[in-house]
Length: 200
Image (cartoon, rainbow, N blue to C red; front, side, top):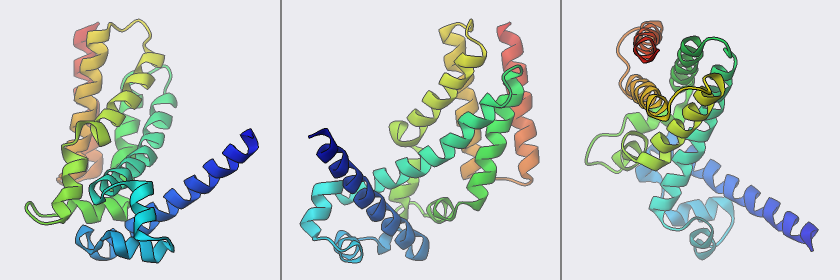
């Protein structure tokens, strides 16, 4: 029985990823306004009802798409922080560099960031920039877990402060880059160095 459930779970994961891959390609090619449930269902090869059963509403599809992309970013963030087990500031700077580098190369994010307020594209942009769970919540959880591993004695309030500042500053540079990427990383490093020094 467990083998049957496992197979069904694998099939469902494959279907879900195919749906999200299709939606991602549509966003990259034509923006979020080009994504409608009938078109996605047709391209995936399932019924419209089947798509709604699997993903929920169009807004749910948007959230799932952004969440998957965020999780891919956050794998790099966790690895970057973990690669500096003896230097928290260096780990946070490496995480910022990884995020900004990945963002610069990420065609979906570039399509989303081009969204203009009041247009269909801004629906995805709001999920990246505003929604506290889809992106910020995930990012803060990942950073907090990694900081805790490096600094297990850090008080909870300090941990929350370091995490909040790091994530919000990095997301700000990600969504509104100004000038050189290395300068942004240096700014984040200096900010985190100054902040952590006040916590000692």
